[in-house]
Amino acid sequence: VERGGGRRSAGRESVMSISSASEDETSEAGEDECPVSEEWLDAMLSSYHEGQAKVASYMVRAGCDQGESVLSDILAVDVDYALQPDTTLQSLSLIIKLLPQDPFSRFFVTEAQFDLREIKFYTKVVPELKKFQTEYLPPDTPHIELPIPKCFHARYSTDSDTITQSVLVLENLKTKGYTGCEFGRGLTLKQTQSALEAVASLHALSLALKVKQGTPLDERYPFLFQTARASDSYQQLVERGLPQLAHFLEKRPGLEPILESLNSLRPNTKDIIAALLAPEEPLALITHTDFWCNNLL
Image 1: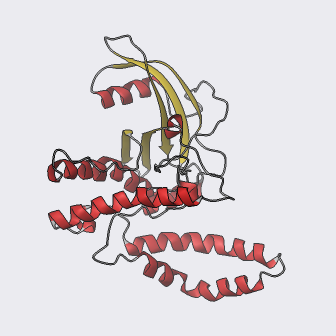
Image 2: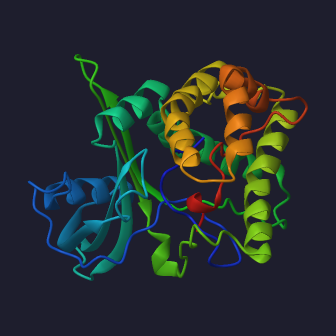
Image 3: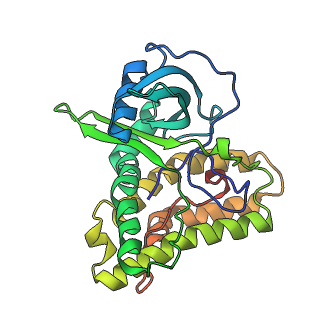
């Protein structure tokens, strides 16, 4: 249900789904550099706390290295603020996910509504899963902790000119010790086990919700990625990327069998994708859909 393209790695024993912040040198943000401003942060934090927040200082930096995020532009923001009338400062480290500026990526995201689904996950699915646990679990039973960051703000809108704007503000889990893995090395066995245990909690809760309340998840949450639409979106990526991969393989001796296999699959990729994505009852659950090492912390 979430946009991929950010990095979330199993640096600790549990896995959280969020894009990470880079270690680039921070700089004071101006309105000409990004949409974040003191006034915007004041309003966002006031809404979250349901009170009057006043920002004392903030710093903005790139939220990931160039080329790491395709489906969103990511900013990391450190902010110090006070809740009026108290003058005691509080500090937050945030990740802000925006639509990508690259025209192809932006069209791909908005056409397939990756941003809308991610926002709906945090604003609709998560609150209902938490409420479900409160209603059905005995008081002395610990709740299942969802492997996700805290959401501070989410907005999705389309104006009269059909220009989509979306923003999602999440906690930056790097401040809690989570780190991204090195893509070339992948995950260790322990990290892989941690990742599967984390996503299993989402699968389990969505299954329990479906069984207990008797409503298919695609009816309860019509914004979830439907098979036909998902197949079309991934087919676009295949059509864009497969020629590049073929060109790469052609220049490397000994890889001819791989190239031949890819070429044989090419006419049927959409059907193959659709078959792989089609949900199967009784385990037709809420899934991540982009669950790989570059999307884990």
